[in-house]
Structure formats: C-alpha cells, structure tokens
Amino acid sequence: MQQILELFENVTQVTWQQAVMWVIGALLIYLGIRKKMEPTLLIPMGFGAILVNLPNSGAVTQGSEVGPIDVLFNAGIANELFPLLLFIGIGAMIDFAPLLSNPKMMLFGGAAQFGIFFTLSMACLFGFEIKDAASIAIIGAADGPTSIFVANFFQSKYVGAIVVAAYSYMALVPIVQPPVIKLITTKKERLIRMPYRQRPVSKTAKILFPIVITMIAGLVAPKSVALVGFLMFGNLIRECGVLDNLSETAQNALANLVTILLGFTIATRMQAEYFLAWETILIMCLGLVAFVFDTVGGVLFAKLMNLFTPHNKVNPMIGAAGISAFPMSARVVNKLGLQEDPENFLLMHAVGANVSGQIASVIAGGLILTLVG
Amino acid sequence: MSLNFAAFLDSLSIMGLGMLGIFIVVAVLIAVMVLLTKVFRDKAE
Image (cartoon, rainbow over all chains, first blue to last red; front, side):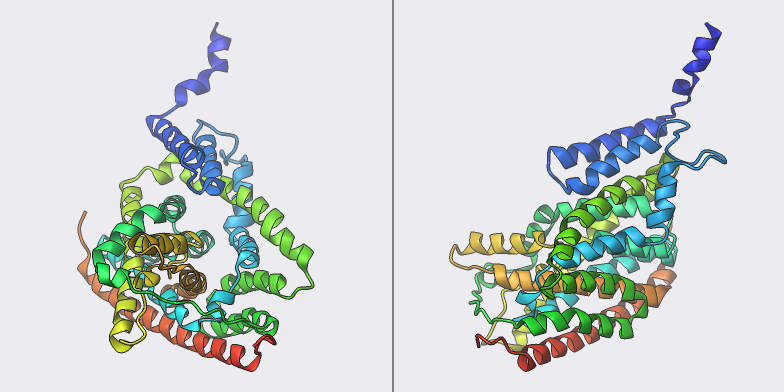
C-alpha cells in the first residue's frame, strides 16, 4: 500500500498556481479552436502551458536534468533563431506592390507605431525597469516575431506574458480597432472616398525593394538588420521569380514548422512562477493600451495630413490600417468603410498601409533596441 | 504599486527620438520607393 502511495506521490504536489495555469492553458486552446483566434500560436502555447505546469514536469529542467522544452528554448528562442526563421516565411507571403504603387501609405505605417512608444512611457510610469518596459511596449508592434526578438534581446522575464498579449491582441484587432476608430473620427470623415488607380510596379522594382530597404534600415538601426534582413530575404525569394520552390517552402513548410516549435517552446516561460504575477495583468492592460494608441496614432496622423491636403483628402480610417496586424487590420478598415458607404472600397489603400506597418514595426523594433539597449 | 514619474519623464525623450527616427526612415523609404518605381517603370506603362 505504501509503495502504491509513493508511486502516485506526484499527484499530491500539485499547487493551486499550477492548477490556475492549467485553466489558462485550456482557455488559450479554447480560444484557438472555438473562436479561431490565432490558432497556430494559441493552441501550442495553451498545450505547452499545461505541459510545463505539471509537478516535476519532465518537459522542463528539473535540477541537473535538462528538459526538452528548455533545450528547444535555448536552441531557438534564447538565441532569436525561431522568430527570424519565421520572418523569412512572412516575408515570402507579403506582396509589397500596393505599397510600391502608393508610397505615401508608408507614412501611416510609421504613425501607427506611436502606441509602442506611448506604452513604453506608461510602463515606466507603472514602475517597470526600462528594458522590461521596452519589451512590453513592443507588443504594440503587433508582430509576434518582433515582440519575441526584442523581449529576448532584453532578457525580459515577462516573455511569456508579452507573447500571449501580443498574439491575443493581434487576433482581437477586429474587436479593438473599430470602437477606437469611431470614437476619434466623424461620420463625414469616415465617408471620404479614395478612388484607387492601379499603378503597375515593375518586376525590377519589386526585386530591388527588399535589398534597398534592408541596406537603409540596417545603416540607420544596425540592431534591426536581423529582423529586417530576414523579412526582406523572404520577400526577395518570392519576387525574384527563379526560386519558386524556396518561396513555396518558406511560406508553407518553414513557416508552419517554426510556428509549431515557437508556440510550444515559448510556454516554458508560462510556468506558474513566471506567469502568475500582478505584473502579468498589468502587461495585458498595457498591451491593450499599445494597440489602442497605435490606432489613435495612425488615425490622428491621417487627420493631420488632411489639414494640409484639403483637395486630396485621405479617409482617416486608413491610418488605423498602419498597424502591423496583416491582413486583419486592412480588412477591418475596409469593412468599416463599406458599413458607412457600400460603394466606398478602401481595401487596396488599407492593404498598402498595412504592409507598410509590417516594415515600420520592424524599424520601430530596431530603434527601440538602439535607444534602450 | 507606486507610480514612477521620474522614469516616465525620462522615457519621453525615448518616445520623441523614436517617433522622429521612424518618420525620418519612413521619409527615406518613400523617396527610395518613388525613385525605384520611376527609374524602373513597368513595361505596361
């Protein structure tokens, strides 16, 4: 009888904190499956959260025995490798033609990064150390790999909460953005029409674009070279026209493989002792602040532009599409435009702003690393 | 939890420099994109 009790001794070592993490893990899985919120990340993270919060879990390091999830973490996240590999896939998926045919959309991508820096200040106000504040602020990049890259660079102990916040709010863009947009725009502004004139972009321009962008961003913010470079490399293999197999692999097999490992592995930072803290709730709130003020920054910049171009006005909602959550934000803006006027198609303008946000968020990440690092 | 106003004020310079830096880079990128599309026009045009 004693031996049987010893066999199941581990059951008695469950703590209430671990049980709470099981519930959180289950919630992430539920949100991923039932609500289809970023399932590629939330489901592995949710399952991983359960896995690492079992008492004496063999999945994580226990004393001198190194757990496999920690091996993966050190192999791919601690050294920034997984997010960078994922960026190759993301770069291969993006078509920058809508931006190249209307370069001024890049302004909205820049303006919509305001939430990052505003949240940095808010996080400092609430007592976070500057490097942790910067790691939290980068949630506003609305870009998972950038968030992981920056948070790991600063060795923030809040990586788990930051990643959960980043991916959750990216999935919640259709809920977060519309009320903010409606609050700071008038109906008249939302009705502004923007006719779209298709301007073809040459293949040469599409090939040179990723190369030139990498060089410029790298010269300005050298710490962003890895982020920008891997993103643009993915785009180059897409646009060059002679590496279709590699482009296909990057968009599918590589992106899917890294996503599996990334989501599952980041869960090592969702162990109860790291995750269950008052700071986690504060980080979730600050993440929301970041997304809200990204939207505010983009929309207000568009309204400011309209003061100087009264005869060629921009629909201010386009500014909100400058957030890097691609293509969700562009669809949200297009839908809002159609709700106001069923003949006002803003999609192509919004897509231009949205892809510019992808570049701007990476540049913002590089600038944060330079200014704070 | 106590609010750290000194750190908040210090961070405002990072906010200012960061946004200025982004817009400078954005301006350069716009110029580059205009140059690329003008120099390397699509044959259909």
